[in-house]
Length: 433
Image (tube, rainbow, N blue to C red; front, top):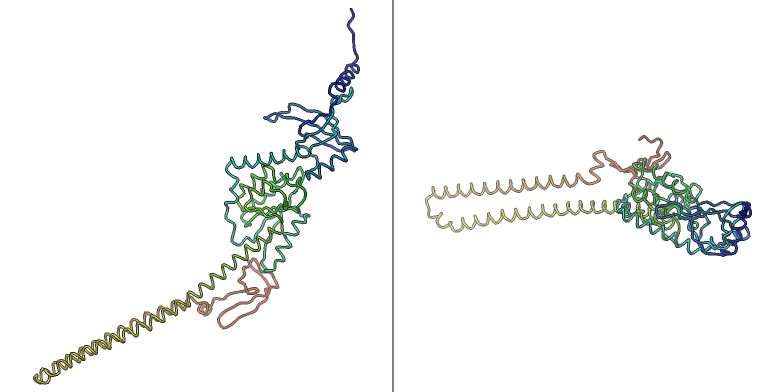
């Protein structure tokens, strides 16, 4: 009996009919988007991997334009995300087989809640991994500068959040000066994680020039947070040698970078306000310490003057008491002196005169010695006062009534110098470093 021979198209068409008859669908299918492109219709490559990351299944899939227009809008409204490669999805699809193009899935639905759950799961896995490595609190343990005025900024130069941040610092009502340096980075998209890491590495090389690092963006959808849930980005932030302030601008969700950063603030403006208030608190503390120092010096001088008065009065009283005692002795012996011979009387008189002279000398010497000690103490106290410092040639230069640093001055600034005898107002003509 002669065996029946089939053409390739007959076999493949039979496969197609079998799939349509036995697996008509649709079915809910979980997979990862390996590739995606848009050419009117949406073309995808779906894949499944095992625990080691090896691909164990892969096929083509299509979302026709009339379906994609509706599905993509619904998906974005519920997740804030656009379909992208690397995303885990749950799709409603029917299998199909074409004799020329092979097997594919025709997608007619997407479950947004599955993707959100996968994002949350991956975020938690990243958090757990950082915690297991023992680095999740590293950046929080760093000491923030008391006066953080030198700031490295990671943002997009065109981001509204970056402009808000700079304007808030520049126009702060307290008049504090800040130095900012922008390290541009992509704040969204597939290339964003690597771009942010490269900016951090550049800042690390310049770390000696800065007090703090700020990562800011101007709000946006949850999709924009993907870069800030990335393990490599979060690890770089956690291990960064400078405190990192996160102002990613998403009030609904907290990213992994928010968690590992030194401090999380919801908006770029909030980051700027925090820096302004931190600097203001430091200056107020300096002013408070200065006032307490002057008050302490004044109290010390007053107390020492009071002690000097008390010692003087005490010595005078002791001298009078000694004289009174000797006088009583003289009175008690007066009768015997009258009876004694003239020689005895002369001896007694000479003895009394000698004692009185010695007592007077001792009292004068003691008073003179104590007065010298208190004069020296008073001179030491006066030497630490601002007035004495001015007399020795020192001066204090102010701008807008506040002490200045050479780095905060520019040509044309009006400054005031307080010195011995008065105040001098100057205009900065040239600055030398």
